[in-house]
Image (cartoon, rainbow, N blue to C red; front, top):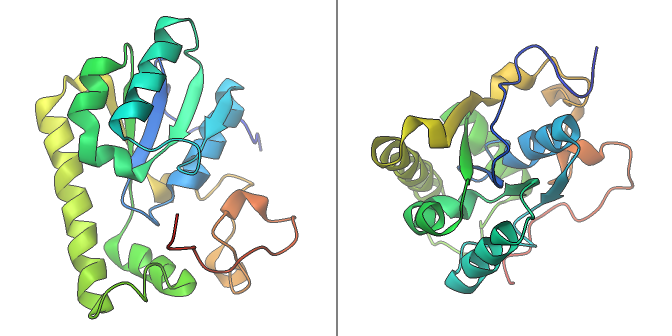
Length: 190
């Protein structure tokens, strides 16, 4: 099996940066790493880029000055997709789709934002619906050639995929399977 291009990896245009987005805990980090390997390009995660106006301007400047081969894992990009699309030349969005109950399991496993909301179970379901609605808005507003939808389950045959039964001591970064166990829970403070 190839680590770089399993049969189900859709081809993406590389005319500008690729933003891998979707609900948090839907597999955006994993999919970003796979596309980074496939296209042999730099992968930024949300600790390196968030869709704030100054960061969008920075990305626009980079692309206009020749830096185009970049994969960015940023679920939060959905909140500001229209500004990103209209400022960053050639940007392409990839929306990761995953079963709601699987996202919930992942959120629970790492206690994602569990201390931040008084009724965390309702928050998780509402948040998944909110992110899904944002992705549907992106698909409705942007031209079809500017986005691609992928299903998390389509990547389960990749050798880097860690099966659920092996995830009990699993950190937030799935592709770092052979690295020492890091923090088990997200930091909720910046």
